[in-house]
Length: 310
Ligand code: SF4
Ligand code: ZN
Image (cartoon, rainbow, N blue to C red; front, side, top):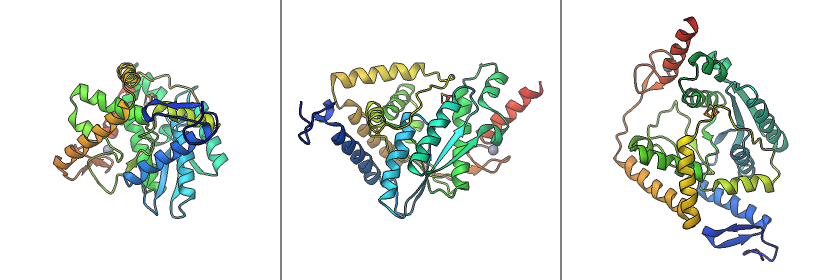
């Protein structure tokens, strides 16, 4: 079959767009979509210094590659990459290797920070201390977000870019619909969060309109050094149910995923329009932004210290 855009042999079918593309035209199509997400949602301005959160998996490696192209066409935009080492034996070593490799290949400045250095705990240590009773992801998500924000400020970044793709976005939205968590739905969107505070570095998601399958394909076609290791603490039971459901829907009605994203975005802007934009306070312990007296990070670290003393 011929490519819909040129006379080459087609190798990729995009049913929702009614197109078949050759590898070269697919790359152009993918990069244009990311560019249009960035420009349509005004994610990046002319003098941004962007920190890309780089785990070493396909999404974040693709993110760095595409942002690198984007930044190299705009002299005022700078890109650096940051990997958070959570301290998971046998997993992080592999992904760190991929992260360093893509940065070396592209000449992108790469920083690595570790939870152990920052909080005195590796994720393995946390799981040991809690005896696995609290899911590792609950600690990891909160501590990693803090670390990313801290490091982004230290690196004088104006934006943090993450590699969330279309599937991640609509799965999260759908899970929140099912849970009835309107507050979390309001925090979705191309720009994360409802509260703006100068201590928060704004987070952006340039790949959010790209289906996961296409991100993987782009990584393969560009021979990007991607680690396919999965974190041993990953517990995604509910997300897997939602993923399968949404994949089935897409199969039945191509284009459903993109329409779900558009509908979610419309809802998010309605919710944000009616949300109260109160200011956020400061944690009594660490001084970081907090909506209660003591932030979640300080609460977690104190609880872990108590367990260590027992
Ligand atoms: Fe952290 Fe959970 Fe992701 Fe593992 S799966 S890196 S524990 S958030
Ligand atoms: Zn605190």
